[in-house]
Image (cartoon, rainbow over the protein chains, first blue to last red):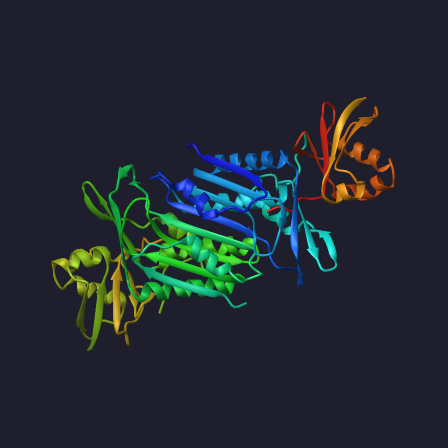
Length: 163
Length: 163
Length: 86
Length: 86
């Protein structure tokens, strides 16, 4: 199956419904659409935040996400996948990133979106800095994210691979 | 946590993005939004279809879905859930139903949407009739849907409960 | 004997030829399974609808029940094929 | 000896005080782990950035690698904290 795959890293906001519509338009085999949108929350550990600033590794971010999108298309029969990840300063209530997956059947759409999110969290070179009243700090990686990503890996999901 | 829950059974089309926006608006704790949209495909087992007609059991359909929405809100920390299921004649490319789940974290949003879909497929009193060139027929239930729903049940997921 | 509303959906409805009916359930009909066996004896269309009672699902007063569920106190019983929504 | 571009991100970048630099890697520096140990010896800011090398992730030519990865042939090496995108 040929999968329509789009990965964009951008500063601008995105429209998840428009991205989903692009993938289903003129496709009579699309039966299931899953979207995930990550939103900047207004607090972290109970403390209000003013904004997040997302730093990324240009070039590598696209390459890593594209690699995982290709892996998702290999594992599940997908009609389309779109991943958009923003960088720069993002205020509470604004969208941070989105994934859309389209398939004929719901299990493929759900599992591939979940898979992509787990890998984005742990493998895509993005770092979040949080602005609070007391200053800025870097968000720490969560062990639960590594554990979630490990669900998909036959080797137990070591986050690095030897070169 | 108080969960905003909406269930609608309607003939009319719906706007999944608008429904998602209603649940996140004015909420600074919303970090993850998952949407599922089920679309009428243009073919079934390789044969083109003209339309689906969805029959439902009014009253019981709402009650069953509301019960599962309440169960989802009990199992996961959800900010909001909206389920809309259409009935009547639906042509290929049109939306059949949607689920939106909103939470602070992605695992709750993904799992609850997946859970609701599995239960909608096997427990909500809806029946699909398919129109093809050769006439109309009722869509058969799939064993894989029962198996998917059974994932969530500690008792192995028997579809009926004794009264 | 008690009056109960019976409701039929999808191909159960089509085979019986009606969507609902009010019915007096005879004494001795205690469970959903009994109702199906009794209905099947009421004519060709019912026999056809309930020819394979194992595949038929039922609800009492809009809650799913098993074939062994007791119907005492029921106001409405619905029979239908496995659901295919979603 | 070979010229390599080093790139730093997030708090690794902040501690070192620059986003990238071109560097001659001395002979005997074979792996990513060796590079981190060597960099840590180059001054206070590097020592601070690499004070806990176990938490630092690395990429050679934009692919994730482990500390034992051999750097021979690398044009670019990046060091950064665990990722927190998504």
